[in-house]
Length: 411
Image (cartoon, rainbow, N blue to C red):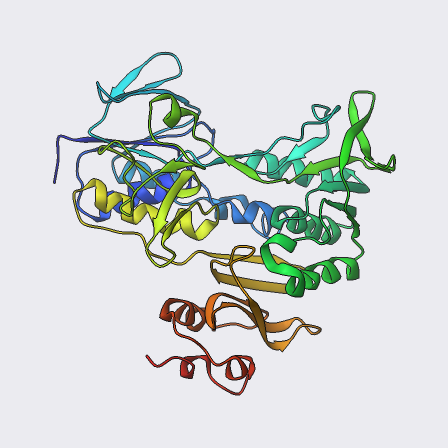
């Protein structure tokens, strides 16, 4: 199939590797060129804030495929290589150093980059971010030498790193701009579960905290200063305040950009020969009726299969529900669906918040928009079915653990 064609994938990420895999599995026998700017072959990011960060996973386990797999599949893997430009008229990409490569189809899997903290002292040694495996390993080394760290940001990354720090015996202070960690994501009923969890494990949560300066000593971060003048001493500062999609390459080539690279349901951009997948893609969701950009692992894992089939000329559409998970201390959680702030009217809990064994459902007009299972397993498929059904669900039966989830819908 298309034996003389060249498909280029910009971004040797999980999404890039899975796209290359899907192209081969779907019969493409032309040239595949997978280009990444990191020195390591494609790897999965969840272990960087979970098992690998805590030393519970070996480095070899984080990689999507063994290095030899790419050669065995006839995939050209170019590492430590930046794609610097796309010429859509000539259908070429340029890499650092000026070399150009022609493509028949191009997939953008360029991911996202951490938001940078814009305060004095943010460029000091010891101000750390977590995105790449090298970042993770720097934080690992910090855990071995530090006695106390400050984490700026109370999102998933900040809390997972805080949990890893406490497991390593390092004191952790988490600075949260709002009234509670994860308040925007989970709402006022469920977010306190995570705040209480971290307090119980000795994390110092500072709410309504705004950093105005990274305090330095001898060129190294020694703490932070807050807007109210408070100084918090630390051996290192880890910043986790969100991420920005890497759209510069696409924007400079004139592709449509809006909170990511805008694609259609088949993951095709405004150029019919260029596609996008993973963190960088802003795609329509047929059930939600709107474009969304999802930065979670499951999206980078599954979206490339749709992109690959579309690149091969098949009719393929991406309609999986957003899904993510976290592990912190003895709490494990899965979340499926999409419930933006202001989009839901009610939260129904099945189980016990205090014991952290429950399912929470976010509802609008009696319909389940999203569900989160905490320390309860083998229920996420049933939760996803409730979300997909679009049916109005009886609130009392939804809250009753004696009523099987499968019995709550008519189909």
